[in-house]
Length: 342
Ligand code: NDP
Ligand code: GDP
Image (tube, rainbow, N blue to C red; front, side, top):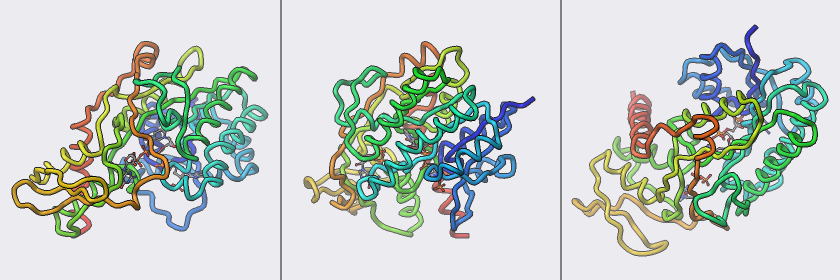
């Protein structure tokens, strides 16, 4: 009989890539959906799997819906990808973020403990837990020091998962994933904002890209590689936590420079701080501006992961390199904007 996987956050970036991988490997995939006004299913449609996933209504804020879902579906594997996942908004909605990203994990673990304790559980932990980093590069052993309500809530989700593994002998793992991007990334995240805006600049739909702190550095990989790593974590003999990362870090500024080259704009930087601008070396035209609006009350300056454990124990590596990731995202956005004009 086919294995049954339950995915929370099915309509998010990672939910789509993970569902595709599991379906390709013969799984029955059940996606948990919360009630939404907009029924847009573009990510699953892009991967051609919108009709292959079965949907069930479940909200991480609603305990009853979680218990009913576990009771009805009796999953073999549960991937908890649902979250209020945007760091910026977590400063505006800290309680909601905590309810979903921290207590939501506990609700799921409690339901599994009572109704399906042999279900394998994956928790989407994050490099944001390292926050103001205590060492570089960051490993599974690096002390956590989060810098946002999102990071703090995820620390709770991380440790409660470890606690249920140790207390109740459950197969529960956390993947400490560094930033991973793709054409299916949410538009509010900096990479997708950059690639989408540049594609719109190319077609004359806008003329500038406005950003916040462009000196922040991230270890950026491709989401499809990372969802494969999640799958591997649930196929081991012993449950454990793993860092998934590329082992390379780049600034937002570097991402912007490379991405603008795709529309033949060679940027140079002038001015400082909020007055800094990115100018086309050849024409003098300003393409990038800085605004306080996109700065965070507390910033994570540098993330750089050490994925050695995942490589050694899971045989996992981040296959897609930084420049290839930008190419993949830019190609998609060029076509996407072009199609929207037809
Ligand atoms: P997305 O923001 O793309 O997707 C999050 C999903 O969670 C959405 O489908 C959303 O539903 C759902 N969701 C939000 N609130 C609730 C709720 N109360 N009940 C049920 N579902 C809810 O995130 P990603 O796919 O990028 O990330 C997946 C997970 O990995 C997240 O937990 C994120 O925090 C974590 N992570 C992501 C990283 C990254 O770089 N992408 C890095 C490290 C960790 P809806 O579609 O209805 O809005
Ligand atoms: P995060 O690492 O989960 O916070 O992912 P984001 O893509 O939201 O942000 C990555 C980094 O880019 C952070 O350090 C942000 O402060 C920085 N950044 C700079 N300008 C922007 C912007 O306009 N939007 C976003 N989302 N981030 C920005």
